[in-house]
Image 1 (cartoon, rainbow, N blue to C red):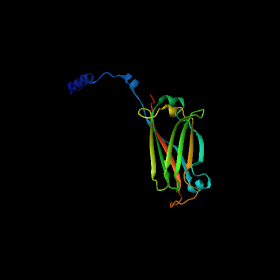
Image 2 (cartoon, rainbow, N blue to C red):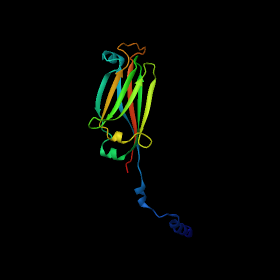
Image 3 (tube, one colour):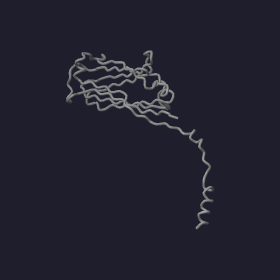
Image 4 (cartoon, rainbow, N blue to C red):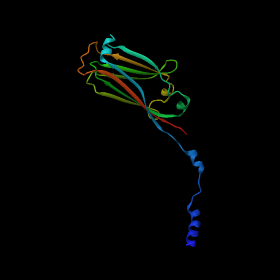
Length: 179
């Protein structure tokens, strides 16, 4: 029995590899972060009461938007995917524009959508930034978003849907290198 234990103890060093504790230097941590970005909703009554139709914007706003131009994110953002989802149950054809603006208010990029009147279904668009997509510099230099919504229809409501609305949702997936 003692010989067996002694033999096992002698065989342990021959089965072990030398440990390389410097391999942690090669470790890359690249999580994918998913988050909602923008949500806009307008009911048909509000669109009609704006008095703006025939291609005149009934809604326009500029929003401070700086999550990508912080030093850590700007230096470590590897790629991004922005997803836009638009639902229109109103009786109007509508246009939407999202402009990415730098600190001086200069447009860096624009996403334009034309959405048919109900029943137009859900319109989805995915926009990639980084390898194989648009320049990541668009996101990292963006300080504000300008949102413009245009009514290409008229000021009357004929939608057969109860509580007709325009809804814009956007979300993003971001790969950020941590180490």
